[in-house]
Length: 378
Ligand SMILES: [Zn+2]
Ligand SMILES: [Zn+2]
Ligand SMILES: [Zn+2]
Ligand SMILES: [Zn+2]
Image 1 (cartoon, rainbow, N blue to C red):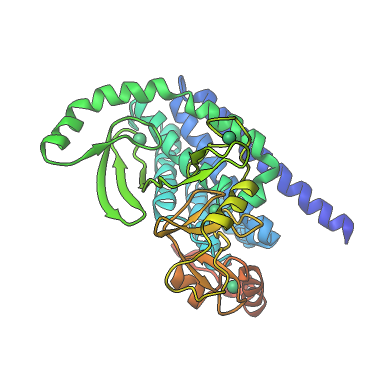
Image 2 (tube, helix red, strand yellow; image 1 turned 90 degrees about the vertical axis):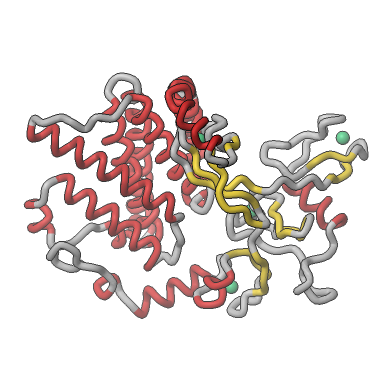
């Protein structure tokens, strides 16, 4: 039993290291072999998705047992089928929601990858993307992948946090090309301004090239013309808390703000939770007196409840995500944030593993797959 478990862990580790290696070579290739960069990054994304599935149950990463047919498929087709399947399984079997922007970005990268691979084989080569375009494409895909690995999947990929950070820094250094891209697009950005669109700085490439979209209570959507990322700029929270050391009030609700600006006292997440427990002793209007008013965050799943009702919004002082609803889960009674519909009809992040296990036990993988393009079902 012990032996078997270790083997699976080793396999998982090998898979993740393989994936990390492909991100690394992808960055190596960005400057001079942009096509290899796309192919390698796409491979890395698939490997990470596989690793995520494997962590749940090792059979979930097997593509199809009837490999006879698979060997006849073009490599590109096989890989694109796999990406789709992996995304579907993560959402249907694991019950995890992958951001639509992220899955669409991965699929688009996969299509680009297939074009490169197929044209290379047939000797035709017209997948004409500018170098800046490729870098921006890789940048955007990395953004979505990195967000998954360090956000909802942080607990799973935590042992690789240091490696991921190094890769992220390397990717961020591609900034000069992003600037070049910005210069090229400047006239088009100006046209957008003349059309009456509001242009704001993008939270990812930092270029003033993001077209503002819909505004919600928790922030404003934007689409960046330079790096192609769609995201939401979270509404600023200007509330202040007194430093536990010197008593000077400081703005605490921002990522990376870990010392007191006055006395440099270290402000950890635990300190913030303590301070907020004192200063924000009430939940929203739905919370009854005496009821728990600090919610567990579904986004970062911080061990302790970390979400307070601050400035009219549920706000996590661990990951600084805000704007979600908070309820007591009717299944496990935990006070949690998350997608209200999902909690109501499926599970909250606390009781999800048990609910999923129940579902898995009821429906073995054999009953849960699609058969596209006339392929044999799993
Ligand atoms: Zn951008
Ligand atoms: Zn201080
Ligand atoms: Zn959080
Ligand atoms: Zn629950």
